[in-house]
Amino acid sequence: MCQVFAGQDPQRYKSATRRLRLNGQSTSIRLENAFWDILDRIAERDGVSTPHFLSQLHAEVLETRGEPENFSSLLRTTALIFVGQTAAEGPGDRTIAAE
Image (cartoon, rainbow, N blue to C red):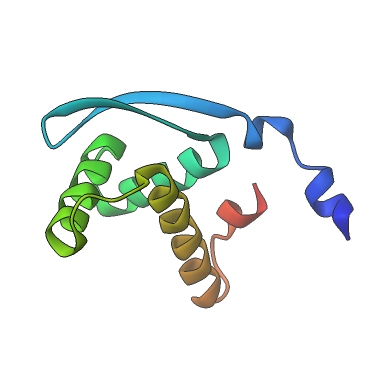
């Protein structure tokens, strides 16, 4: 069973830092490449750039709950929600979970 997880490409769990602007503020976010890939797919699906998607998400969280305690963790769980919803939709493009 663990071979599925242990055998994954190390590039998936290598971290990458991206610099961007969140609602006018310059910042950097460090996530594993697998999460960046999923966030890029969400942004592409929504027809926006990844920085635009992240800025929009940050603004909505601010409005709903105030400043997030850990925005990087919020992004990871956002990716997990997206993967779960994609899997629940049934057959189709499931390359996100398999990559």
